[in-house]
Image (cartoon, rainbow, N blue to C red):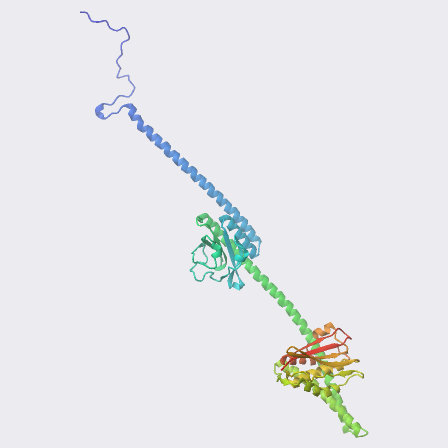
Length: 487
């Protein structure tokens, strides 16, 4: 039996182990795996690495965005701070400093309400200067004491911080608002002196970031220095104004002293003349009587009468000088008692009628019988009235001098009205000054020391009354009015 024919196709060629360059299969006994299963772990590792790299890239992108946003905010804050510093450096007014700082913080923090206080009233308290989110009537009443605005609450005054809810509960209620917003305290301290502070209400979920704290610290220092400079500038301005006022006052005092010195010189010259005149008369008439140079007893009596009159005049001048000295030393006394004005006027009438006066000048006397008693010193009131009447008769060349009495609520008014030379407005302004008269100069037609009205003014004031003069001008007469309390 013959074998079958072989196939006509090509015969398989057995592999040559020496020339094969491909990988050799591992034996099953050595734990070898098929090639497809060995490539799977390598792809998973590569995929994990890709995912990790993508995560890192995404995280880096987020960090870059955050850094860019932070840089943008920081740049904005620096621009704002630079702008604020330029404004604060250019102003010397505390009000402008407060307004700028408040506006910046309100805009940056978007706080609904805020108020700024500054140290005022000579350092005795903090006064609200500007507010936001509240009406002026609401924030202007929120005054706080100094140096600690919240004495009942432990508080670090020179450090920015959140205020505890009990702090300033009654005072800061309007600032907290109906929602009870938390309050953030920003002090403006310079050289351990709290120049002022700002308290702003922030939303409950609002946090103050670190970069914002840095910006606040910079703004605090700038505002504190500006407020301190404004305080110094205002203090210097006040001192300058006070110095100018004192300078003007000194100039006025110097002018018054020069005028007083001139008046005193005139007074001394006038007084020496006024004293010499009656003294010369006394000595002259006395000498004539002593030498017997008279014809009869009547002429001798007339000489003695003139000598007595001159002596009385001399005594009056000396009394005026002594009274003025007592007034200036505070030793002049009055003793007030209920006094009948009618009786006092009756006692004065013959004395007044004996005063020298121009021919034709009429002396008109009132009827004071219906007037109540007045509370005065009788002798001092006589002195005042006789001085007024003497002046009126001396300065009246024609017409009349009248005494008028009028009852008013609680007082009696007495007027001495004359038709004499009158007093100019300038003369009225200085008539009650020492050594002053209606007419000045050495060549005055009328004599007198110029002390009478000054003494009368002091006496009336000591008796609880008043004295005043009114005149329409030179040549139009004058009216001197005194008032006395009713007993």
